[in-house]
Image (cartoon, rainbow, N blue to C red):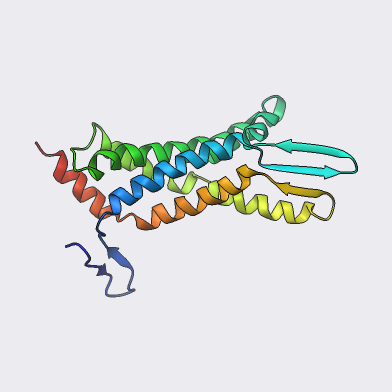
Length: 184
């Protein structure tokens, strides 16, 4: 039932809370986050000035900085956990929610995409990355002049959108809708 909430009698945790228009909202948040993700990857993330030396970098530059030698696994981890996995989760959300938000049947293998979306959640480290960068910038601020680039703000907005999108999702409602609309 729309607007009703099911809670655990023992601990009070919300088990089921469908919302009107939630799929459309999740789809729009996912599309917006996808656009912000591309801005966060390629625009300048931060600039550092120290004693006449100037450096500007993006997340893409950070991934490519370790692309050879013994630090290659670090480059792969940064690319995978900070860029590729969040992009794949956003793509999976759009793939699953897109048709259902406009009352169409789900696309083929939407159930697998939704399983991937849920399983990859703990490994998509965009939120952890932004916290780590913020702590590092506070430490570096005493040694050099640090300027936040547009990608930093895009990434911060992206993290907020991802958190909002994940909190809007009632997985039980999505699975139920997916199951109902998959039937011939």
